[in-house]
Image (cartoon, rainbow, N blue to C red; front, side):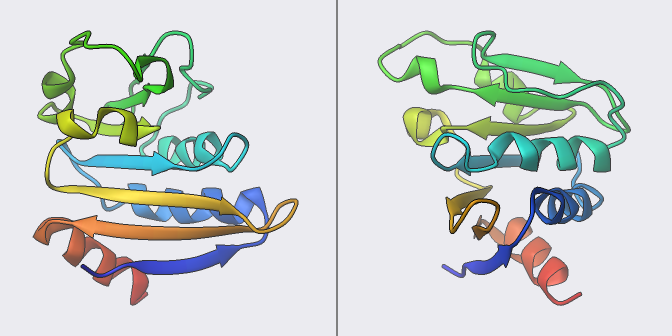
Length: 152
């Protein structure tokens, strides 16, 4: 399994990367985001939303679990932190197989419900604004996507 790592020095650089990534995403794509509180998961998602043409303000769906945004294709933003010990079925498959891009924060908590093919993104603090971002493609589609993005 390949992985791609790089460092961003500001939240704007993190958002710029996710913006560029969004331009290459399509319906049914699933991204999982892992990182400590304040690592930049929502900053990443804001850049992604902008790249998908979302004009609404994007914020973490911590209390609502799932937020939907309309852009050139829909963005489904999930924060499953509160589902760690829950067997509740929120219809994840409908989102994962749907007509938009799904972003799942704290995805390791629902590992058994995630699609096998997905793009896993880990964001780690390296300083006040500096972040190490690790991108792990799971599946051929995401491997090709990463090769394209990281060769630019």
